[in-house]
Image 1 (cartoon, rainbow, N blue to C red):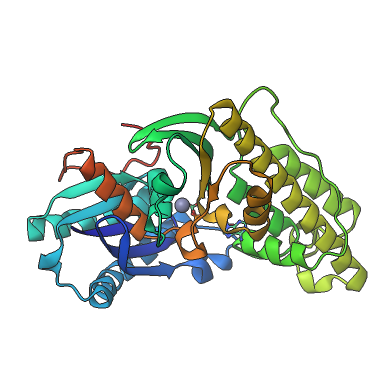
Image 2: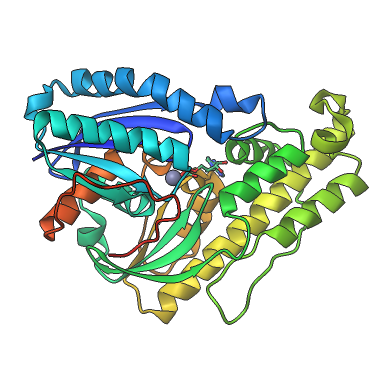
Length: 348
Ligand code: KG4
Ligand code: ZN
C-alpha cells in the first residue's frame, strides 16, 4: 500500500511516499528556516505563503523521487493539527484536491502521532518488535513537550505536558538571548559543544507530576546572561560584539541551559517509564535531534530506548504517512471533509 504523506503544520513543507507504513520511497522536505531566520522565529503569515509557493513542486518531487505516478497512490494522509492554522490549511486543502482528483481515500492525521510513528520508518525491527507495548513516548518539539503512554497502536494516554514553554521553544528563546540565531536548538547544541565548563542553572522538577515547566529556566538564563554581560541578542545587538572571554561565558551558559533541559526531560521520562512499567521509551520531535539528549537518555535508561535518525526527528511527510498506514490497519475510516484543527489533541 502506497501512502502519500503531507505535512505543513509549521515551517517545513514536506511530502513523502511510504510503502506499507515502513519503507520510505521519498521524503522531500523544504525548510523555511532561511526565510524566518531574519525575524528570529516563525512568522505565521509568512509560513502560509511559503507553503503555498512550495507545495506543488515538493509534491511533484516526492512522486518523481519515489518513481510513482499519482494514480499509483492508494491513500493520501495529511496533518490536520496541532499547528499553525494558516499553514495547516494549505496542506489540508492541497491534500483534499489530490484525493478528490484521484478518487483516493483521505486521512487527516495528528502531527504528534506522526512524530511517534517516525520510529516505525527505521530499518530493521520496529519499536513494537524491539521494545514492545506499553512504551513511554517523549514528544519534544517547538510547540509540544508531552509524555504519552502508548499501550498499542492508536491507544494513547497523555501522562504529562508542559505548563508553559515547549522544550524546543525554550531552546529557541535561549538562543535568541545569547544572539545565536534561529532555529535555536541546533545553535545551542553547537555552542554548548564548545564549552570548557558548565554554568549551572536551576531545574523546575514539578515533583509528584509528569508535567514540565521551562519558563523559570528561561528567566534564569536571561538574568545570568545579563549578569555575565552576554545577553547580546537582546541588549547589545550583534553577537560579534563578544570578546574571547565573553564567548567562553556564553558557551558555558549554553551548556548549562542544555544540561538543565536534558536533565529534566530524561529524568521525567524515565520516571514515567518506571511508574507505568513501560517496556521501553521512544523519543520524537525536533528536540530529539539533540545530541546530548540522545546520548544521556540512552546511557541512563534501564529499558531500551529508540530514537529515529535526525531527518525523521524534525518535521517530515513520511511520519504522517506511516501514522496513517497504522491508523488504516486498525480500521480508521477515510474522510474527505477533514479540516485543519490547530489545537488538535492526541486521541480518537
Ligand atoms: O518537530 P519540529 O521540527 O517542529 C515542530 O513540530 O515544532 O521541532 C522544531 C524544534 C525547534 O524548536 C528547534 O529548535 C528544535 O526542534 N531542535 C532542536 C535541535 N534540532 C531542532 N533542539 C535542540 N537540539 C537540536 N539539535
Ligand atoms: Zn513537529
